[in-house]
Structure formats: C-alpha cells, structure tokens
Image 1: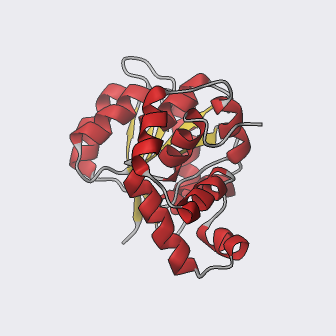
Image 2 (image 1 turned 60 degrees about the vertical axis):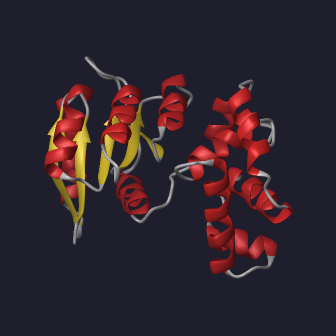
Length: 216
C-alpha cells in the first residue's frame, strides 16, 4: 500500500513543488490538494490520506485550526506535518500543541521532505529538538504541570521522557540506557499513555511546559 498524501498550501507553486518531489518516489502517492484549511476535513474524509502536509499560515482557516478540526473529526486521523517558512514561528509551536506530528521548513531539501513523510507515516514524530527548545523557552502551563503530576512516571519513564526531549530515537535511547529496543518502545508507550499525549511531540511539549525539562 502506498503512503497517500494530501497537500494543503495556499501557494500553487509550493504545492506543485511538493507534488513533483513526492510523485517521483516509489511507494508515495499524492491523492489531493487544497488551497486553504477550510477544505481539509472534507478532503480527509473523502480521500483518507495517511499524511497531510499542511501550511501553517493560510486564508479562511490556518494550519493550527485545520489541524484541530481534522483531529476532532476523525477517530483515526492522518499524520499531520505542518510546513512553514520560519522554524521559530509561534504558529509552528501552536500547531504542534494542537496535535501536529512535526514540521518541515519550505526550504527543506527534497530528500528531507520524502524522509519526513515516510517517518510520520510509520508512526514516528518529526521532532527538531533545538527548534522545539527555542520555541518552548519561557512558556509554562499549569495544565502541563498537573498532567505530569497525575502521570506519576516511574524513574525509568522520567529518563525516557528526558531523552525524548533530546530527539532520540528508540534505538538511540536503548543505547543510552543499555536496554533492548522493544523495552524502550514499551516505556515510550507508557509515557504517552500516562501523559495522555497523542505522540512524542505532545509528550515533549508537556515536559517543557511543566518545567520537567528546562530549555537551554
């Protein structure tokens, strides 16, 4: 089964470029396009893409609200990658908080775009630790602090969450903690479940906003 992709951007040239890059790859199929966020939910329902590439700044409905709308409307939503011009854009952070699985810069190289689509389609989050740290600096949330307290993470799970915030993969965490990859995967799943996080990105944002991990 190919990885099906929906492109959402108000700039036709950007959509054309993304389509050309992805269509040239085996196992990836662009099934539709939209020029604004308001069109996304009906297209997701009709086309059932596995991945949505979503511009963060659009007319009618921006990428943040469109992400929220997709996640509310679908019990098994697609993976969402927001695309942006500036990595330090507050819109990006809000999109990640809304449930996006990661973000891509519009200046990303073709191979980075393809790798990102394959990565999130496989269930991983596309997290850029330095960028998320910079975006999270100075932010705090009482809801995040309460979520962390309720989670009552074990010491091992706390270690795993810290390493997740550094952007480590399961294999990298296994090497760092001298554990098997499957054991680490179990710990990651437990951390997400206890925090009520949709994915690693959500868990890392909770870690920063609660003060458990301090940017810098």
